[in-house]
Image 1: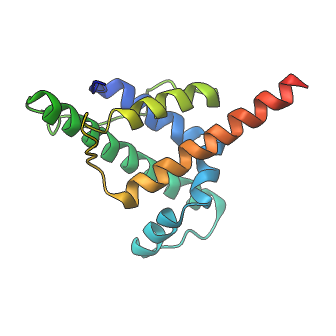
Image 2: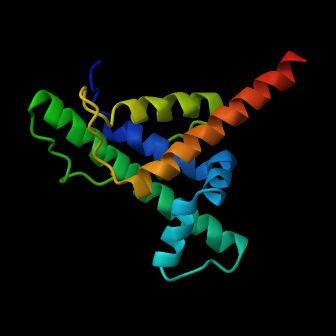
Length: 151
């Protein structure tokens, strides 16, 4: 087992991909932690466009927390300086991953790489649980699509 530090560009692609994926947006609809986040934000989106923008902002923050967790796990595993606070993420120009299966592979890789070899993770459960819900929903969607094409 080894921890791989994700590059800034990789995280930007993940952000853009999650923000544009209807499956990821649907996963948030079933996440209790996302609902709690909405309540804590003191604003309940009133229309579909506002909700989509709220989800996009949330997914950007989630990806940033995952990146921090990845950098921290890497730094502690290999006793190196994380050095990421001088960088900001900008996913606007990133090319999104459109295939759910490819996005799932990227997210599972990121999930694996936010843990040290001894199992420590550096992200709060209130952010990790929605991430797990996104992965679970993508797995279900990929499996469902495979079954459709196998018929």
